[in-house]
Image: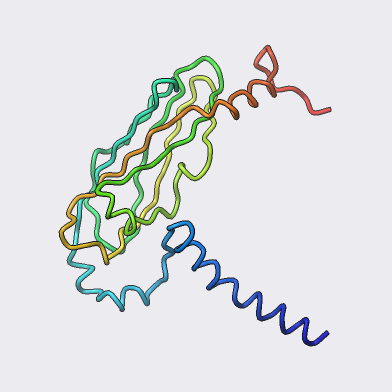
Length: 181
C-alpha cells in the first residue's frame, strides 16, 4: 500500500510539468511562467520594447452576423497582459451558433503571441438579434524577434451548422425551448 501511495504521489507531482510539456509541444500553447521569465529575458529590455497589435475580424458569408473589433489597433508592451474586445451581433431571426478561427500575421510571431482567454476557444451562441462584446486577453512574449514591430490578429466567424441545428431542434418548431421529459 505504501508503494501505491508513493506512486500516486509521484504521478500527481509530475502532472504539472507534463501538462506544461503537452501544452507547449503538442498544442503549441505557451504558458506564462511568472516572474522567472522576466528575469531570464531581462526586465529592463522588456520594459523598453513596445509593438503595435492590429485587430481585424469578419463573418463568413453564410453566417448572418456582424462581427468586428472594437478598436483597430493597440500599442502593447512586451510581457504584459492586455485585453481587446470584439463586437458580435446576430442579424438573423433565429438562434445561430458560430465558431471563430484566428489567424496571426506575420506567421513567425504566432509562437510569441499567447492568448490567455479567447472567445475562439468555444462555440458562441447568439439568439436572434442578440449582440455581445467578446474579449480576448493576450500577452506578447518578450522573446519576440526584434524586427517584428506589428502583429495583426484576425478572426473569421463561421456558422456551426451541427450545433445550430441542435439548438433549433431543442427549441422546436415554434422557437420555444422544449421542456425536459
